[in-house]
Structures are given as C-alpha cells and as structure tokens.
Length: 116
Image 1: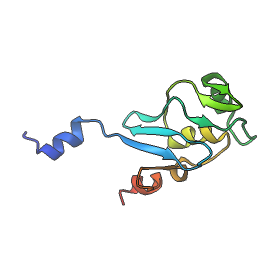
Image 2: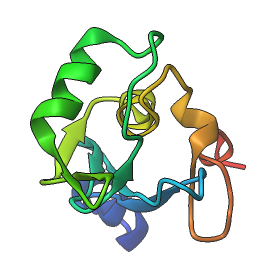
Image 3: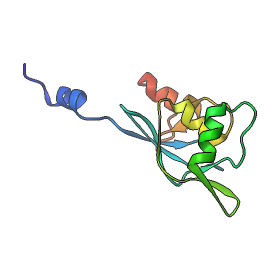
Image 4: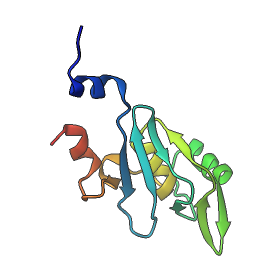
C-alpha cells in the first residue's frame, strides 16, 4: 500500500500543539500530543489549593513544585492524561481544561478538539 505524504504524516509523525493557560496570573505552557498534555517546567501555579481540587492533584502540587519569592513554580515537566488534570494542577481548583487552554492564536482547546 502506498501512502500519500499527508497520510504518512498523519499516521506516523506525532502531532503536537503548544497550548497556553488562559489565566494571565498563572503563565503556563503545555504541549498537547498523542501522549497527553505535558505541562512544562517553570509554570507559575496557584499558591494554594481550594477544597474542590482533587486530593491527588493537591499532593502532586506539593511534590512537583517549589516556592520562590512567594510564588509556586513547577519544578519539572509533568505529563497529564487530560487537559483538565493539567488545568486543575495550575489553578489549584476544579476547572475544565477545555476552556482554560488555548493555542497561540487564542483558540480554545474545546474548539481545537472539534476541528473547527
């Protein structure tokens, strides 16, 4: 079977999209790929967690971040299975990743996932 160049790219090369967190007070960058959502080291995250934040996320925030000059900073890259888990990690509360991640053009993740 012979593949066209577009088919080859679609089936064999990883697709990655760089996403940015929409809350300006928490600058964070995430890479969306076939593997999941890779939150990049250096992201500024909420200093505290609300009661709506899942316990597992609260524990991960404590383990994977450091406090510098009163700000909580992600100390290493973390791969999440969902955009919402990555968003909850940053916000420290229960939020939807579909509306808190956007690409460089400002298009929300929920729109990107629909292919619009």
